[in-house]
Length: 278
Figure (tube, rainbow, N blue to C red):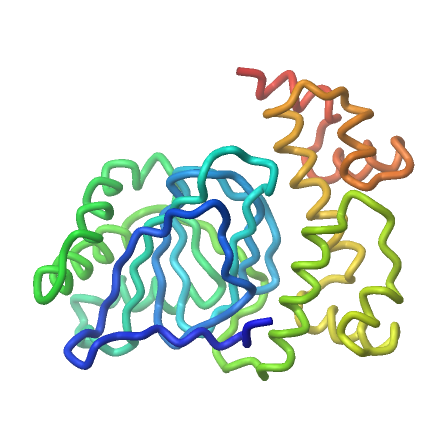
């Protein structure tokens, strides 16, 4: 398992890196790095983990993360499409803290909880974001600052309840990464607290306290959120019956599945499918 601290390798003469990620899966585990990050999801669906937040992601999302905020994207493994994103990462302190840039620095401060921008408002900025990935040197610096200024005027929502400013101990991150990977591979069957606790060499009681502290919720609340996210995509993308989807997502009781899905979406799975039918 990779450690939680992901080094971003910048050349001596660079303070910004930009790239296109285009592979079968998003392979990076739950991690953080000293750089700020702006990510645009171009292809694939799945679940994003931002700080203590867990929720679905889809193409067209633009997310801003402050440095040291733990995060990862997990695509749906049964998808035929690739996992593609455009990413820009930059060192803290490269922009001068002047009054004219106060909105940008306020936005970066808020991004300690993770920011997702309103799709409609940022749609016209997507071509500009894509063009950034092709730039380098002073042009990249100037255009990134220009983009951040425009984004600071766009509506957005925060994702994580907690702010992450300080580095997390490496061992904490490795434990959470293991739990994420385990849930991804086993959400479709019954999961016992003991097997997850054993996975990270902790007692059940210690693991429960640890997970609550790190993620702001119990492990089984987190597991349910993950299952509901998977079920949500299956309702839209598959022809399986609601019952088949409930069982496939690890729910042994359909009434319990309906209850949890209703709590998340304020409607039944059947109504959700009908509402989002193409």
